[in-house]
Image 1 (cartoon, rainbow, N blue to C red):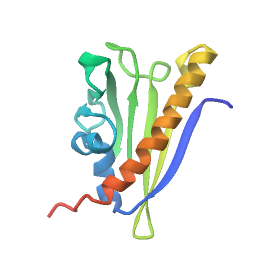
Image 2 (tube, rainbow, N blue to C red):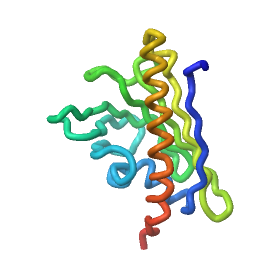
Image 3 (cartoon, rainbow, N blue to C red):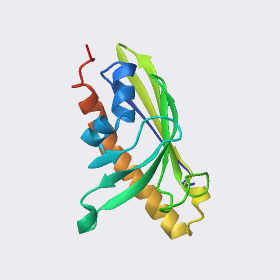
Length: 153
């Protein structure tokens, strides 16, 4: 394995406009992925996502919005060391590309940057496998949740 890129495609029974909101809005994001999310969904915005209780071993992960092109693409960098600006080599890049398909949306998620992190091979393999497991768990949750979201009036 090359441990460089994770790619997943999933069909979502919701319009690209709704799916874009579900992958970009902190209020929607925390319905299917992290326990909390604090950021502005505009390019250059920084914030954090939270998994579990930070006071009980949970994780607060830095989050930087890279690109937002409603309703086609949303991307962000995450996992950089606290206090550092997210860039290639110190963070992972996640991109959601949305394409209208059969009355819904084909969502393509790509996560890159694993090899550029400079991790020793055992850490690289562990991080890559953890992210594969995570996306395989969370993307179906995204699809189920997006199918319940109503179009704003």
